[in-house]
Image (cartoon, rainbow over all chains, first blue to last red; front, side, top):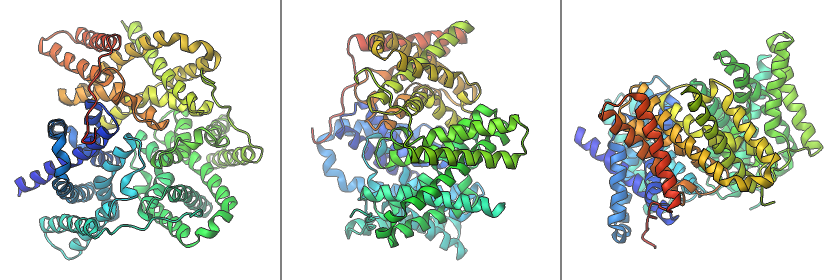
Length: 205
Length: 205
Length: 205
């Protein structure tokens, strides 16, 4: 189980960093700038969560997140002509990571003694704020709030599913697996069937 | 007194959230994205203050701020054609909230043992950084630093007035009321008479 | 030694604030908005470091950073026609500040018990995130990740040099001086010879 979770963690970090690095390269960032955007995309959500929880940011406890982000940079540099063909693989990795990150955010928040509604918010922040910070850095309106099929909603959904599992007294590991799988499945279905949250019509539309 | 303060807090949160949601809708954000922008506008300033003070962010201690922001979203969805007619009401609510938020920021900072000048800075951050974060999220240059009539200056003014009240040994509740009223009145006058801080002329102007 | 370090600290703060204020004035910010951008440029990197380290932000412990930033604002207002002629002086002050800020970030992080790789990251954040936050506030893509000659790389380099000095058991004050000088020299050389990190070529280039 440890190896599977570690694999999901690294695969998600890699895919999150790749998304930041690719968008930075489209904006003519230099290698180091793209690396920073990749790191922020990968660890930004968890960092905001840890700052709000008053915990030591998780990536400061082991260098693996910066190393995996560095590998993502090397990957884009070395294989840039082939990166676009791997879109589907990156999407799967991204979605695996999303499920894991949401669950990690929910569990850590509960461990810190906060109620379930705060945990659901923190799971959502963990999964979605890295992408939001990426879009702020590259000076674009946040994609996840405009065109991404249920990206943030899948995070909320995963938190609610975790809550329902605890109401059923399921063991923690099973609750975590079901919650992560819920995020994964909802997000896959939303992309496949192009389901998205309606655009908010303003007074001028 | 408790009910009046709670009313001001909720009215201000509602009006701050409305301003974020309306600007997000003008940028074609989806419902969830607009909700996030609304929340960030309403609680962002206080969150930055609490992070700098090393306090638990206030909105994590009770769900009311997220609920009031959710009501603001529903309000914009349900009454979007009429929202524009309520501009004056929203402005009054926003200004009431501004006064309260500044005082809350000043008092909390003093409670944490910081000197008065830090408290004035934190009052200003509490009142103005939510709007700044809103404008970053929707990818606009911060309005409060460019066109808003003395928005941030009114926050500083409220802090200074609080300081003057303490020099006069006024009781805390009275100092707080006078400070919040000062913010309210200065802001109302600045909007009415279109008073604003001069634009900084650069070397190219 | 105390006076020299204090001079470097104030000169760096002044130059960082000047860079924020000048860019804000080019965007038609008002005086107060330009002041805020100046402060964020000067203290933003150290604030992010202190929040991540769970330390009290350094500028909340003495008002000198806000005062020096205020002097920078007055300087731009009073001498705006002559500011452009001082570009070289500002560049030297900025680079002196960069060297000092990196070393302060490295040393403080080690004092908080973190390993050397975290210290190098924090030194880099201390030196470079203020400029990044400045560019977010004025709604531009971060300059330091696109066109600045080895700005962020010089921060990393300074941290690595500090690490090498500790491997040689040099006394702390000497290690700090060599590290700050390394940042200064690398940055001066990079600007003089227009050395920069290559742009990351994306799949579309």
